[in-house]
Image (cartoon, rainbow, N blue to C red):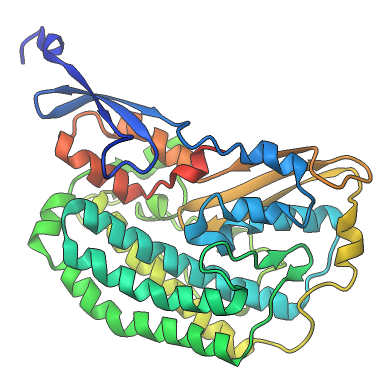
Length: 378
């Protein structure tokens, strides 16, 4: 390589106009077909959710949170609800715990299906772009029947849930789960058996577990390195029902490079995540108890909270999603809220992960991490 090779470098903005750039812009420095520098730039969404939460009541706050990532709305709203419940010392009924957990896992399944289709579309694998998007409609039908909305569900509320299951909701949940189970073998064969897909992903965007932890990765990007790190097992929430299930944290082991992960491993990990969600839902549905869906004292307690602070978190589709909440005495809204979305870390990991890769592989690496822009513009 010429000592003056960087004199030939050019800067290319990937986004926000690129069809694979969903509200973000990354500055890439190229020498020929290779990336030598990556400069991620967050800030194109301007949501200001943390500031908005200071002007919303404690029953309204979860509505702001679910809009941070509507693809996993049942999961996104929960950290705020959990923090309020801790400060208010609310008791969540058993029926609400089970319903919350079922809908969180169905939301995880839906979000994976959405990512699956989007990722394949960006790689030009059109068949596998359409099939998961057809199947996610079954989950969306259940969301709509339960809450009246397909994305902004507003389900969990401090002390319980806003809506209750009925026979039609249960039927649609079972329908969505069965549809996925029936289609999974065909999906896996089509996806993982494709020589073209494997050529585009195997050995691409490879990093070690040590690097991933240093960058702050969690969820599928770190479990794809063989690390069984999952809040549902490591720190189970008493207001959810994961303790009623028998399941194992899904991980993926790279046979050639143990403790490492490439884009192909991260696709395999999403298969396992979806299978685990189905397993949890199937175990919880027969255990759904009768009873109330919200603490009878919730409305009075949440109207004004005492001074305090709490930390709510959940194992989201893309990793650990959390919120720190601080309140003043007799407060009707938050004094301060700090959101920790899982995708800020995965987006800025590109600074170290992308250099050395070909320009055509950038979207493969980015897409395999599944970073959602709403989580980094808080």
